[in-house]
Length: 198
Image 1 (cartoon, rainbow, N blue to C red):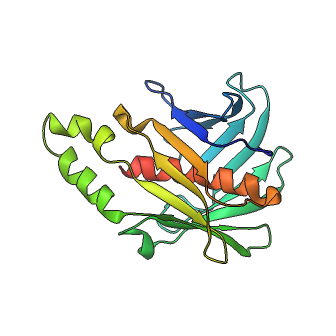
Image 2: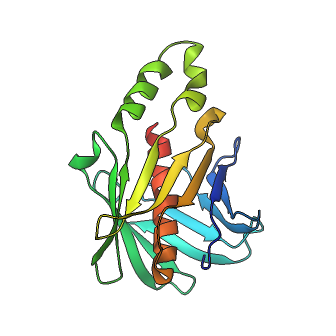
Image 3: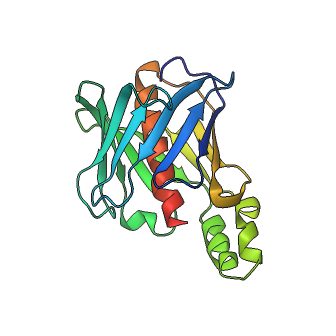
């Protein structure tokens, strides 16, 4: 996942027993196929080159089975850890907040939900019969990625769709080429976590 061409679309499959999605770039080229096995106590996500699942390029593993302040480490195809995404527990009750760190645990980027009210409205309307079926079109949260200088460099936004199955990553500033893998894997993990929470 280098030399990325934005925007990048992430689309979940519906009707499977695993939580899986594809990532395609602005030219429609498949970048990755992410697969999360269901009913596992500790998160274990595999990122393949394509849907054939013949070549696994990355893996994301949780450090504990409770995800309230869990860290999710990134591994390359050879099993070498090269960073992680950490959920900022208590700070994430109102607005989701995560931090991406490098292999030496040095903070690099922050991912934060831009508007906490979207999640509240989505939850409230979701409880109303019939109307709840349309929340996927009405409420679409977005998450910004900022560097250590506080500059926004990317945004992840849910697209209008039933079942919350479409997301898009757009570039807002300069991305350090060496960090693009960590940023992409961090956003993929964030989607899996936040989508599950509703």
